[in-house]
Amino acid sequence: MFAGSRGPAGGTLNAEVTGRMAQGQRSNRAVVQSARTALDNLKYEVAAEVGVDYEAHGGYGGDIPSRQNGAVGGHMVRRMIELAEQQLASRR
Image (cartoon, rainbow, N blue to C red; front, side):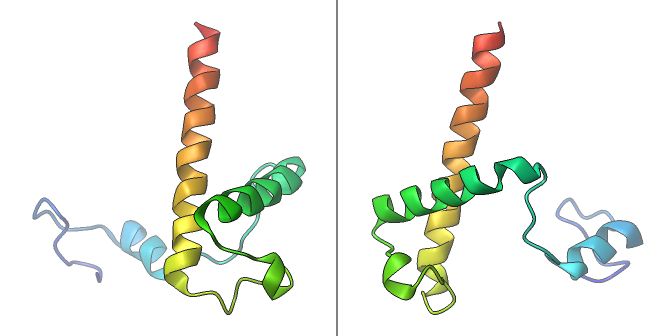
């Protein structure tokens, strides 16, 4: 989508939003740096559950099809949402 193009509800998207959309992901940094190891462990755990073997590729996922890497990422997001929901529920 470009500046001035129509958004999903038919409205015009502003330049700030379209500028961010066009940039894409520039880095793969953890917001909380101390969580990096835990996120990596989660990635390998989820990958094993869905049948993706990063270790067979030397820990490198670049030659694994994007569909499989996407499945790992999708399951990671589901697991993180589940953990966040559990933490929120325990605060009540």
